[in-house]
Length: 421
Image (tube, rainbow, N blue to C red; front, side, top):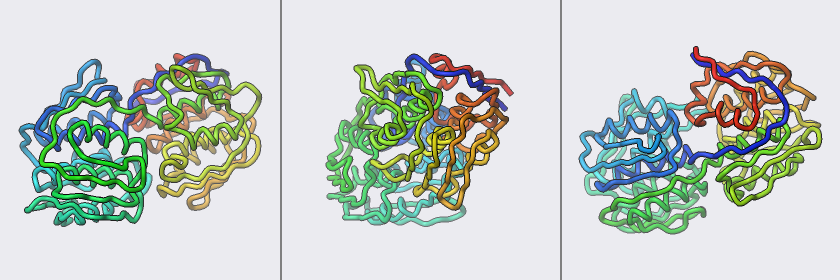
């Protein structure tokens, strides 16, 4: 099993290109199921999760081709052969459940396994089911599979979600595009990935308004047509690499970065003493004067601080001046990286959904183990700022969400290498 060896060696300088958003692309790919015409995605990230979604779509009979070194995905669902998303594929990745809404909307039936993914909490499917049932679907759980049908087709409705779930918003919006009549989805998620999905669906002929707000209105249409869509910049990869010069010192420009994607995150970086400036090509991040200051963080749905940047922010706070409190309100079990950071000399106390971090002057390299996708990259960031060598094992998690990590960090002066297991 591969590992990554990181040696702390001072400030970073240069440029890092930011890829298309993993979470956006994984949502856009199932949208191909809504139409028999081709859907082409550009600026696609080259990740194992994308390959998993490709395998899932192909298992349904869709055609998916990766072009231009994987950065263009050409898809067609004109001749599907199955409406069943099998456990062996779905168990690998949470986003696999996003085929449920499209299959139900276009074909009136779907059988989808309960999903897997990172072990960061239960993340049940009830919000997805409630929304689709509001549109007239009949859904039953049998033997670990959701059996869904809509014999007379889906029908528009007014539905308010109990929680602004990103995945449930995506599934319901996609399903509503082909429902009869108007759907009003209240307490909808507002994430940039939702906005990106709606823009793609609109280019396919969907009639949708309100994306980026808590109320989305969808007027159902008879059919959707093909389109070409560029995947939005990955705000989580952007925030992650913004933390590299913050934790190591130096100055790095993030190519393709947009302030509007990470405003709440930038507020915390600025409060910690890190400089962030917009450039013609993206965002420039620099830290030149001593240690950062401790800041508190509470994870919240967009536009709040992203849960997917909490682990990385904790790595920065480990070497900050003072004590910071990080509160996780989105997922339980999302402090599993804390014991690994403690192995590197960090001072962290975890009580339920709250972690208290007392900064130390310098972390020390150690063998550590990645527990999930974002935890894995937080340990790499910590290693960049640590004294000596840090070996991060179980980095298969990393490959799900970050393309060419070693190459990108090496490009700005980090001492990092992948060790084949």
